Length: 328
Ligand code: IPM
Ligand code: MN
Image (cartoon, helix red, strand yellow):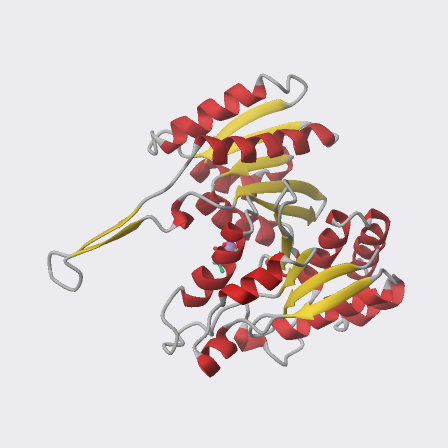
């Protein structure tokens, strides 16, 4: 069966690492057809388009999306803040109902997964200005948490924890201060936990979780948390296991009524373009997650094994992409 992959190569180092990941996918011999979508900062600067409805519908017609990092260089004032991030990344996550942001972290002897709710929280865009530009200006930015959204995320996390050897799930939130959202998360977590008696549970406040991730990350097996906490914690987790350059993401639509999207955790790193610091590992691992999600578990396993083999050589070679492609 041919898998139709929508490719958003990305900005900055995106095109280089996405090409490396696709070269690895092709080297496995798996049957894929790719469709390129020209989206991102360069496109916006060229014609002012962010993501047209027709493009969104064409993306919806793909089996999966392989996406590079998107965004202008830091400090670039030609593009209003958030245009690309909200207009492409969040629009795709929301419109395609990719409600699970799955980020596995392996390295330095660690093996844990963060499940980040991906369609709600403070990313939902609730809020606004009052009296903008005046000394009495007000800005609000709310966090949207629905029972449905929280429950489907927590349930996914319990299922995942149950399938893993340690069967341990930690809820991370800030229930001592965010008493409304935290209460909904905590109650939902406890109620769903009753259906999974074989999964051991824990709760950490997000600030404490930051200490534990640095001082004792081995305590974690699966973490479930909201959109913003998950964004921050997964950058920290990436750094803890050896750098965000190694971390891949699945934006999953578990109902499979739309394509899921796979992308590195890291950003577009415009300052690294053309240097030997460009490392395609996160993009390659994201492509492996994509194949796994498309039912190609054996091929995905070959890719992750090849990445591990190449990364275990000391010093880590510069041309990781071609070395992985030779080994799959
Ligand atoms: C990520 C990124 C995005 C996010 C940005 C680019 C919108 O940081 O995937 O973690 O905040 O989710
Ligand atoms: Mn992030």
